[in-house]
Every structure is written in C-alpha cells, then in structure tokens.
Length: 465
Image 1 (cartoon, one colour):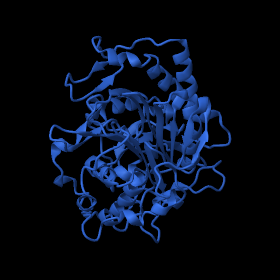
Image 2 (tube, rainbow, N blue to C red):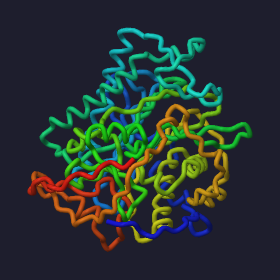
Image 3 (cartoon, helix red, strand yellow):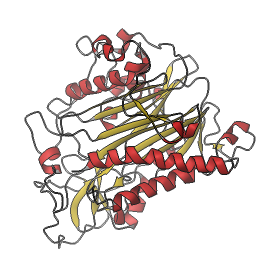
Image 4 (tube, rainbow, N blue to C red):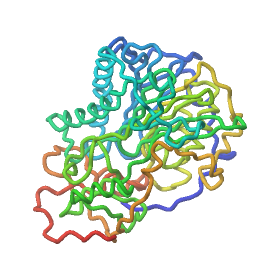
C-alpha cells in the first residue's frame, strides 16, 4: 500500500458522462420500478432502483467484492410521508458481510423501536437552533426552541431509539458466529425523513449532504454529517483515554489511524464503526452522532454516499451533478459514473474504490439548476469552488476541530491474514498489494493483527502533545 500521484480531474470535453449512455432503457422511461419488497408495517424496502422520490446506485470498485451496501424504506413504520435511507461501507476481510448484515437488520430494529415510541405517546421535544440563524435549520436534541410548534412533531425518545438500535446492532454482530467481525466492520450514515424533519445518524466517514438554495436561487451544499476521523479532537481524547494510539503512516501523512496499544495494527482510519471488535476496548465506538434538521421550502434533495464518492468529488460537485439529471431515476447512477471517472483522472494508477449513493428528493418535482452541458464541466479541483458554497451544518461543526496527534514514520510490512479467517481475502492480498490494475490510494485498514504471534514486546510510544 502507498500513496500515488494525484492529478487534477477536469470533467471537460472528454470527461462528460453522457446521460443517454446510462442504460436509460433499464428504467423504461418511468420514475418508479418494481425493485422493492414489503417490510415491517407495510414499508416498501429497496436495495436498488428508483421511485418518485428515490434514486440509488452502487458500483463495485477494483479492490475485490463490493463492500458498499444501501437501502431505502418508503412509508417507514407505516407512515406515508416517512422514509428511511441508509448507506453502509464495509472494510476488512469480511466487511461486505458486516455492511450487508447491518443493511438487512438495522432498519427493522429502528422501525420497531420508533413504532413503539409512536404508539406509546409523543413527548414534545424541545429542539433548538444551533447557530441562531434562520437559514440553518439544523438542531441538536439537547437544545431549546420552545416557541417553535413545528419542533413538536418528533418524539424526544427517537434519538435514544437510534442510539440504542446502533448499540444493539453492534452487540448482535459480536454474537453472530457466521460473521467474523473481529477485524472487519462497517460505517453507517442514515437519514429518517418525517414530514419536514430529518433525523440524521452518522457512524464513521460516509456522508450526508443536503442541497438547498441560497438567496440568489443558487445551489448550496449543506453537509449534514462530520466525517468521524480519529484526529477530531473529541474522538482523539476518547481513544487516548482508553489506551488506543493514533498516528499516520509516513507514506500517507494525512490519514490518521487507530492502533492497538502494543502492536502496530490494525490502523483503522475512522473513529466509529460497527464491528472491528479488536479496537472496541481502545476507543472505537458504535454510538452514532445524531442530529435533527427542519426542512424549508429552499431544500431540494439529500445525498447519502460512501467515501468512494466524497474522496474525489466535493459537496458542490455532487449536488450539481444530481441536480443536472434529466430523470431522477438516473441521478444516483450518473453521480457514481462521474465519481468513477474522477478516480481514474484524479488518481491515475490507483484502484477505484467502491461507490454507493442514495438520493432522496424532497419535492414532487424539481427544476434543473444547471444545464447538463454546464455540469459536465464540473471540476474535482475544489479550489475552483467558492468557499461559501461548502457550508457545513452547524449542528456538527463543533466536532470538526482537529486534534494535534503524532505522525509516526512507519512503513507497512506485508500483511498476513489472521487465524480464524478461513480462506477469505485479507487486507494484504486484496487492498494493500500492488495489482495489475493499480494500487490502493487509502485503505480503511492498514494491517490485520497477526494472532499467531504474541503481541509486540516493544513499549508503546508516548503520546505527543
């Protein structure tokens, strides 16, 4: 594994993805397909396809099996105007199994918990504006906004339900003998929409971004989640307090990872995740960051996607691409195709990551903000984009403070699979080695623990302030 040369990705004349080439015939010109099954309380469950308000698409990268999973539940808990959307990015030898297990079980758990909460009673929650600015309608559950009747729509217990369901999901994984999740795990970013309210839960470094309109009707991205990396100050403090170590490898100084106290493994590049039980005693947690947002007439759609998208496209790139789609049913697929092309252009020689995206449209009809030809000139060179077009939701901006953590000069050794992993592909054989189709730019894991050997006898490095 190692860094590779980067190159500016410019979607100009040769970089446009023709919408007509996206197998439009697969959708037969309609906005809704039959790729759904009936779930709890009559909800319509999707893992692919499109509907009036939904577009979703995933594409396998060049690292092996597709470890990205996604799902949408329409009419969630039986409510007509309620949606559950989730995107899950697996990592490690069995990451695909973890992400699929979470995809298949978390929504059902949450549906039962929220239905129970609804049946018992609605406790009016005092939800407050974080920044006091009417244009940013994002709330934390511990705020106050007693004068706002709209905030009384959501039960105050729903945040507790989300947190409990995530923790129970992790506990279930730990007891499931059919999935080896000791050194494998998954991120999760979920959005529940009820009426004009969004409830966002984030675990790891997948991301949710809202497309809204500014005062001049321009498209404005609002990042609803913070990428929960180990070098965020609050995450760093928790990890160090539990004897976990954080440092970056010499060949990728910008990627901070969590390491076990006495061994240079596994080097997980996120601070929260399902699974990864080798690190659960050392600061990695499965508790999501939960936030709320009240929607306004200016809000157009929400995009949930794995880091295969965000690593090569800015928030602004993403919303412009989605807004340009002539058919909503093709929006997610067009976004993924742009991201794949950006990987090949921006990081030539690197293996493309798995990409998954879910687009949740908030209105029955939307007006195209830009012509398709203009969006084809979107550049992944983020310096082109106006700084004020990358607004981050203030509900989580306090978490984005970067802690001072050491950069340890390390070179990775060849990685061996751990015992008990059957014959599954290991990080070394699939994600870290140089292959004929390129090298991996950034892995979630740096090294799987070698359980055949005793823990390293060298003393752990002292923390650097």
